[in-house]
Length: 344
Image (cartoon, rainbow, N blue to C red; front, side, top):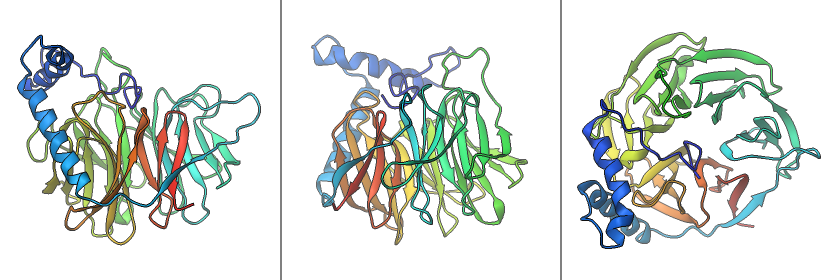
């Protein structure tokens, strides 16, 4: 599973007022199995998804496979505790700690571990409906995003609650538990950007103390539009990158929301993490396969959009998050585990 639980994560909400492209895509997803059995003609949405996958596969096959092997980072919880689905990862380069946010009810949602998997901090019980993303700001504070309540909470590393942002805009009635914000990014001068993708298709900007400044974006397939903005990062050149998940692309903007360019045909694009030397990690899966299918961690050149390399993730229920463990070694989630691709 991936999102909208990793089981229902990719399900589309069909309402009378949904844009036509959503209806076409949903019909296409329904018809794919029937087409495979010779029952129906493949829809235009299904054809486009297959074409996207073919282009993605060609780009990956033309790139080098990175010489990295997967190693599970075993989280050593106290007796009686157990991880649920690991939704997101964040690594502190100063301390080497790996932070994760998980969805099980048999452990705290927010957990930090050292490189041996020993728990350093854990907290957040009872604060989340659907824990979704976790990021560390430049000062080392811990920010979490709840996709159920559309709430962002800032903590100190020891779990002291410092700030709460109610993003709002939740639909009523709720047609799915996943109806809120997805990720958070930090820019100079305390500027904060939040992607709000499950019920909305927008990016919001806040001040460092949680005051909303503005929002931009709309639902659609055009440039500057979104179909589930799922992950967001800002680089050292003040370029904002958005994983436009169901449109199968990464879009680039300036910090005022002006569209700059896109990297298309990436498949279902879940996650983003800045890497060293102008690189960008992303976790992708084929658009013509069910959400949560096997895929790839892809290393991109931010300037040229060239694929520099990849590692395959052959297991299901992975790639919801991608993190950089340093030295060009990415990490991701696979179900309730943390997988670190390293040189051994």
